[in-house]
Image (tube, rainbow, N blue to C red):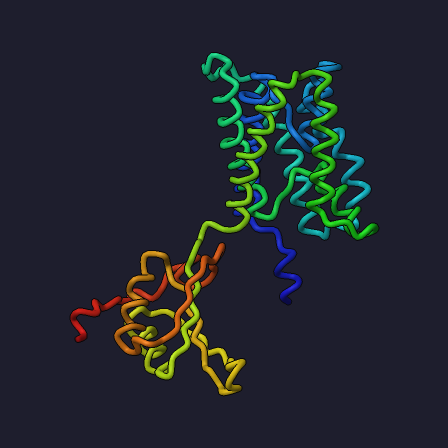
Length: 299
């Protein structure tokens, strides 16, 4: 049942993939193409073909993806295959539409502003697509096949493909434009990674204390947060050291520290960033009777 559920097609995913593809297409048309900036991946190939042969990227995006999807369909899985085909079609349609919209972004061809705009807009668009399980096909399929047959990590294959494509792009862009293309790629990559890592950032905490049970009960009662007791062991003494793990929102960290220090000032506590937290209190609502009591009122 779990496998069937993971392969299900969700309407929300399709809507958000369409939104992401629309934003990415907008970025390619009004920032990359308008300011002669290159790109990596299959989008970069379509821009090379446009510059050299004057073929519309809306058509080449679709045509180049057909053989790639055909070669890699058996390795994508049902959901990934449907999402890839869907994303490819939507991206092609939106490229066609945006190129025919009488709109221009007046930045006086400032390449710095163009690269930043392309990075932000393109990164957000692609990040949304990846966040909801979609892709726009292209080099992702090639990288997945290399990983399966040659054992080469996808990230490594994608990097080298981008290097090759950007190098070939020098046939129509000069070194100045290529430098700004690299700036665009950096900004876009940072935003894509942020989207993939998760929007629901949290703080994970490990607490070691002789009063672990009292601390756990207080956290659950006053912060309405779940607590997990990990059965650890001291490396030097070999004594059992029950350790508490609790994830909280960044704004709640000071409340957690107050609870721990008020119960056991000698407790050992470490806090670290959690890229994504899913579940009650993070990706859906917590009970309505949640109440964080002020420590000053309980003393």
